Length: 69
Length: 273
Image (cartoon, rainbow over all chains, first blue to last red; front, side, top):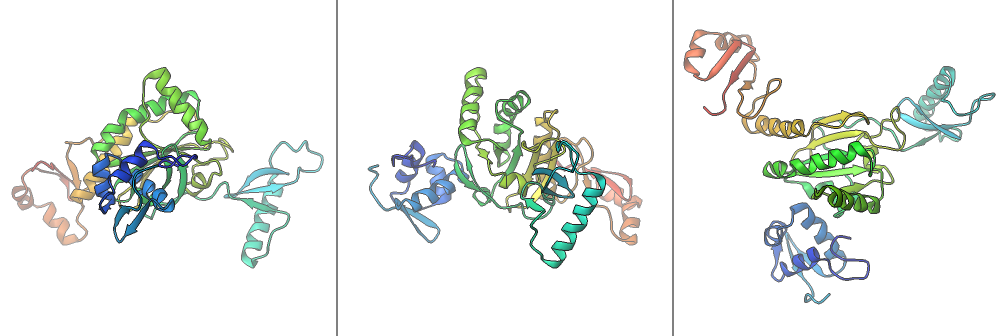
């Protein structure tokens, strides 16, 4: 897991992605805001969606919880 | 039971009677196994004495979609589709903590920025665990000061290596060969390079290959031997007698300054014009 560690805490890249998703954003926008490569954003968003921290609305993603992990 | 290569598949077979069981099947055993495999495939009969293990299959083909995968890497779980929109250089190496591979990783790290400037990502692979990869890339950084910025697939189950034909049982049953796959932004496999275990790859050639593919796509041209960016490129050859005659006429030379026409089928031009 690149964004969420085994103990449930967010990695630095996970926190950055969640912070970039305060408002709905596309993958490319998250990559631009975080400075992460697009492939890592896509991979990370899958993790965050699976963990219930992010939801997908069409082509956009948005954080579902406050960044508290 | 022993594993040996028969045709394009690994098979398990008992040691030959009277042998120590440490060598491959005899010629007649191979022939018999080959016939048996073919017959059973045709008839759809489940094999009980000859088992195929998913180790060695055919090679992927240029111009076709690259085999899809989802794999654990040093930067999380990635899928091939995560790289869509970018060029990708997928490469394999035999094993972590080995000398030639270490020099290659330093080399790949050295061309990482050049590839980024060409909208190209790098992705490594070997049949090692992610913990081995992590320890190795940390060791490389500690000992040489070289940061490894690209992810490395931990292909312990050999699924990706098998799908891409990275395993060459004649060289090693357990290690991937030194393979390079260039995949375009649409996920199509555009180039493959295979090197043996003994020989480290030429990083400049990998960058040159990416340049050549991108120039060919952008300009509908081909590139000659030893082409480098800035050199003249090859104009598609005429495909009718009429066009061939036009290409070899004096009019064509006059109308197309910058073209270097050696004959109707070999014409170069500068991209700067």
